[in-house]
Image (cartoon, rainbow, N blue to C red; front, side, top):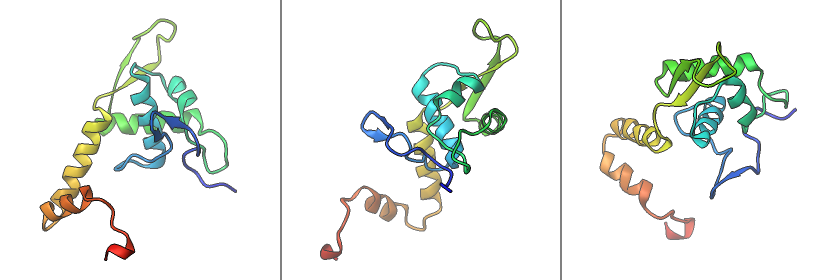
Length: 136
């Protein structure tokens, strides 16, 4: 039985869409990636159709699961929501990113550096070229 997570092989620009976003769970990451890529408000149904994610059973996550996770992302401040934004869905919530992917990642980096006894050393190592075993 395949595990839950991103569907391999899908691409967005030069990066793999299925690559998890640090600081988010797998489904949170897939939802935020879909919302960021859309660049417009999405309903739960719209977001669900755009997901690059498979549930543990190998199928798409249920509508109620996606709705619950989008509500969690709204409570975390990553999504904003409003009703009756676009025609045809008067009762649906429309969700939009409150932060860019870059701002979210910058916040994750800041929280990570706040945990380090020597943030400069951590940052230096993070941006330095990867070392091989031969270089050590």
